[in-house]
Image (cartoon, rainbow, N blue to C red):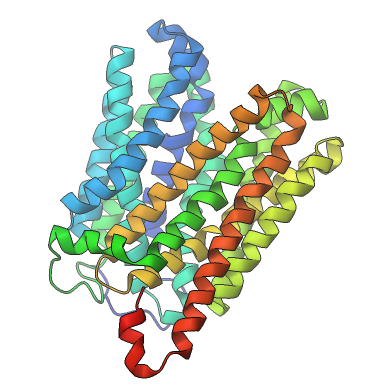
Amino acid sequence: MARSPSPSSSKRMPTALYALTVGAFGIGTTEFVIMGLLLQVAADLKVSLTAAGLLISGYALGVFVGAPLLTAATGRLKRKTALLALMAIFTLGNLICALAPSYAVLMAARVVTSLAHGTFFGVGSVVATTLVPADRKASAISLMFTGLTVATLLGVPAGAWLGLHFGWRATFWAVAAVGVLAFVVIALLVPAAQAGEGSRLQLREEFKVLGRGQVLLGLLATVLGFGGVFTVFTYIQPLLTQVTGFSEAAVSAILLVFGAGMIAGNWLGGKWADRALVRALLGTLVLLIVVLAGMSVAVHSEVAAVIGVGLMGAAAFATVSPLQLRVLQKAEGAGQNMASSLNIAAFNLGNAIGAWLGGMVISQGWGLGALPWAAATMPAAALLVALWSVRRDAARARLPQGGVAGARA
């Protein structure tokens, strides 16, 4: 039987959080595993490698578009019911991927699968914060996102291994099985109702959150901060092989270091945000700027490059919990599901913009070595946005009590 929805006072995290982590693991695996299957997919479906690569872009676009739309569509459901519906969509999408007879069907299935991504993480973040005391909300979010980081570290390599030995379809069968497991554990462990769920919001009430300036500033900081990560990470293979001098075979092992860094950074960012959210928000962005800029030097040494890749993973995911919790706080109750889902969409928009920026740097002839410097400009812009947001908070706090309502952002 599900536990009571009241926040746990124990030092141990509620088991319901681990159910959300399983779902996050499955979603993270299906998002990135296609990168290790492109050659097999292209050969089997008789399409170019470039066309196969669009399966990644199609998924990202589906997340960006699907997050607000599916959040709106599930807005009248209880959060647990919404999570179960999303895992059903996720599982169905992966089953269609496994059975896809053509490239077009596979692309459509990838988009269907992606629709669940943003809303699952968005609604899941809200649920996670209701399961714990106020001083552990960021840690609860980071625990859920641990599923995503573990997917990058273990799920993606395992999926690539399955595809290599049993065919790419076997990978999607395995991910669909993870979806079934996640559905079961969420059904068993997540409370039927969470604190603050209250009455259903009308669609227009959900979208009112977009009229809050502080929420928009939070979303913009997310886009810019994570955009810097993918300016480099999208081109990490050629950067390590052509600039640093690693063999192609060595890149997979180095990416494991990136994954380990993600797990550590995700945990540390959550702990820091629990103690002091604003300091964590600003501090993690500063750290990301320093690490990305430092990569411009590190990539010229094999040892330094490996260390830099690990630090980049840590710095990138240290920002996740502070950015997510900041947006949730500024949504202030009504519309939290929508705000949280939109922030997940913002992460994916940042990924797409970062990949585009990196491509522009290369196409303009500045070379791969210029990517880290270009990447650092994006979290630098995110830091300015965050500072502006914090300054608005401070100005509002100085207003007389009667003027607060009129100054609400």
